Length: 166
Image (cartoon, one colour):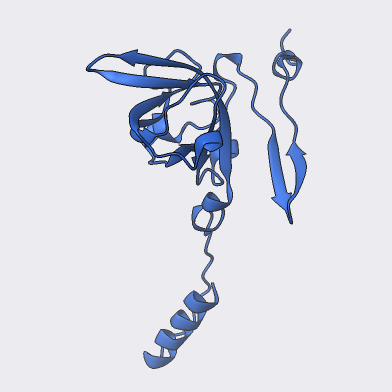
């Protein structure tokens, strides 16, 4: 921000232009990489000569960006991060919708049920865009500072979702 402010000030001075009031919402550029979403692999489905699906316990309800506009993500099987990425897969969500994907054609370590999938750069917009589509509760959110975790959004319950129903 300081570099942007200094550059704008310098250009205005050079061109004898009144310094404008500028408001910048840096959002994604600052917080995206600070966030990682963790999923548990539920199953792996290999359709020979077509594709392999890695199904996880989340998806478009907690991260709709891929379903909406194919936002690119990198991911890794966290508990196998030191192993080579040897399999091209499509990461599928839990909603049973053709568009409920996290990423297509991504190289990952060989996934198995119970593995932990880490999807990177999800710190911007994931929670603010999350929904209760199909009555799926939103997950918890945890911050980590100096190695200490702190829950700052609790996991929703089904009771939370139906509390306004009559």
